[in-house]
Picture: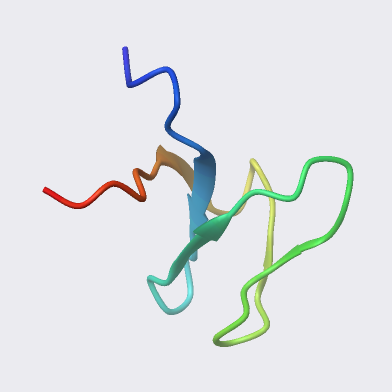
Length: 51
């Protein structure tokens, strides 16, 4: 169970970049252009809060 305010992100299977999930749209990695999806890239909870 993650933090309530943590936005859902994808971790790119090709290059390892983590980027915000775009619900209802294309989830293209901004670094390498890989087309991520629930069956291709791992969904992670990414916090933008510094620790």
